[in-house]
Image 1 (cartoon, one colour):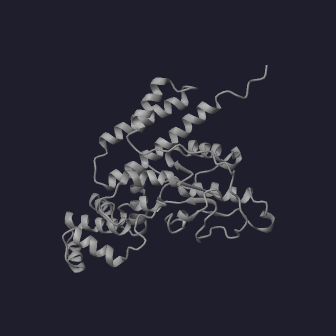
Image 2 (cartoon, rainbow, N blue to C red):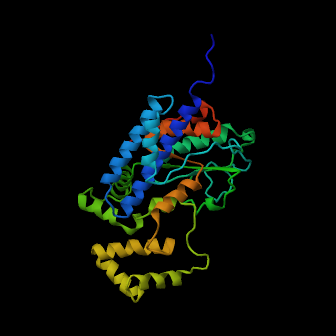
Image 3 (cartoon, rainbow, N blue to C red):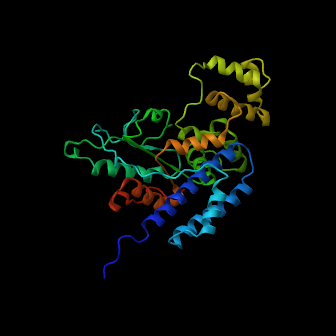
Length: 326
């Protein structure tokens, strides 16, 4: 007797999408906790327990038990969350791209927001193959409109995209692994910095690194449209007990805890107009601004989830690791 086609599709899909959401939230929330200088110990334990429950519900049960569902809901309620929705329009293929990697802003098409050191080269391969294989104009050398370059989402104007004609995705990675990878790639390999504990700590304390990945991913502009650099600088100095820009620069050059802190707060203030940023809301806004965010450590599961959301074929999501050294 033929098997019924209505087996475990809905429960498995539910568990998988929820699991991916929990993993993404963990990575983003870990990022904001690291940047805020808070301890990750208790947060990490809660996240590990949540992830374990998610994985158990996906791999061992067809339908999550009431107790498991309650535990998941309880754990998830403490941090931002999002269930990715099926993309009703199907794969967003639009005519218009001849270049392999276009760096201009885009408001429609298959858009990959590509952070640094998250295994993005592997995902780029998936994006390029789909842009090629799904194009009805490929014989003329025209691929589906897509983007997959490094840079911030705001630089690519993804805040202005047409959500009915675009699919915006990204990747996040365990923040500890990611920052170690960035240190060894950019500082040690390229700039030949000695890989000492002191140099690594200085790298972590760099103002340029603070909120970098949050700012790369976010698609919301939090500054008042009328805010000018002069106004922001003036407000920042006043709110931190400084009288002039020269005084600020002297403190930063002097270094130490206060200098590093002011450097970080200055960049934060220029991006958000305040040093009292609601990071929980920023993370939630990031989740709400995307159609899908995968997890590097769960690349296989992430691609299967994206396959479900876009009704892709298995051939679409096959890949080989581009790099695996870290």
